[in-house]
Image (cartoon, rainbow over all chains, first blue to last red; front, top):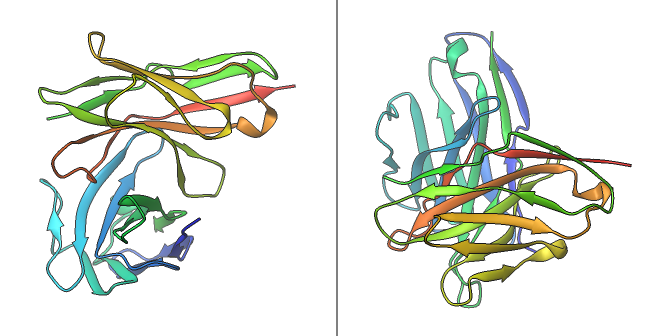
Length: 118
Length: 114
């Protein structure tokens, strides 16, 4: 089946630095990708919807200047956590919509990325 | 706004026993319903989904779920589990309009014991 790949799977960064997480659709084009955040033993929370060639749509309460999303191509969306703080430590998961003619608009999820800010 | 409640955070069962993972949702409008599974160190994989029609939905790996509108539930069941079913299971809903924005439950950790 279709694959969505996230990189890196784990990253540790120092407080105050920025870190970028990539989400790639490997065998389909994705005009829409989604970024979720998951705290330990909690649900996945939608952070933003990433649209190829346009600005991302952020959910209420998500700081767009802190969580920068770029969807510059049909196979790649990036999430940059700027000026990271320990409270940004979390599991970040992306998903991508396969809008191809025979896909049924199926959503595929990446493996997730663990971010630890020290 | 929509919300999803998975009533059990952990469910331990013995191999070959039946299992039911419970999911209730809250929404003032009609929704689509989903169950996803997450194996260790992997992404989420769609098990099954209810969009319309028959309330009993069959998915992959022998799982099925029944949509009960009056009880706002979408419980997941499997008649006989295997060790390989050990994973985290997420129930989710989406609005029929804007269908791909998912609201997830907290997840249920299914552990199969030999």
